[in-house]
Length: 242
Image (cartoon, rainbow, N blue to C red; front, side):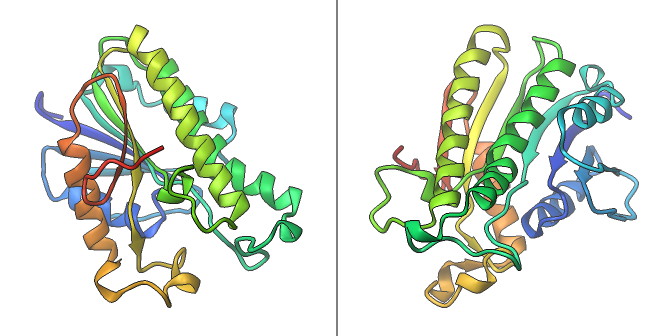
């Protein structure tokens, strides 16, 4: 690996946007991309390495991350694409009467707890002088001031909680890991299994291919300054109100 190699860690790499991000990053031969997911992925590219994880529990994350010696590499980006909106067993709630505490816990774990545990494990493994960007998929729906429709209780709460925890981590890291930049990112609507049941009311010009979404993501992340603040931004690079 050359001295000018930039390394990117991609978690939740089996998602549509993540796969496209990996493909676009790997075009540059000076990029080393390390991916993580519970699904086995075969990239067939020399500058992509995949790590299958059985779960996203703390011990598992600590073990796989410690094995990488990331404090010895030029870590440039930690991108977290883990999350869930619906499954065959549940859909976003339209009314409070539909709130199921077990589903609520499942959504919180996927959308909030897992990204935070990933960051926690990474912070244990790096040195305090390393400098890179941490971007996690949030959503505009996590904004309190933007909420004019209600509903989607579990998903809204999970993204609002993610934003709050990312803000807390940003404040903490400004004291001890001064080279980190945190980004809470709203990708818009990507044409993927995640959004498929909810695309009917999305204008065609606002329904993005995974390749478009990846391009927007990488551009917006690249444009964020190292300012020891949390950026809450959308695919256009516009700031979202909390």
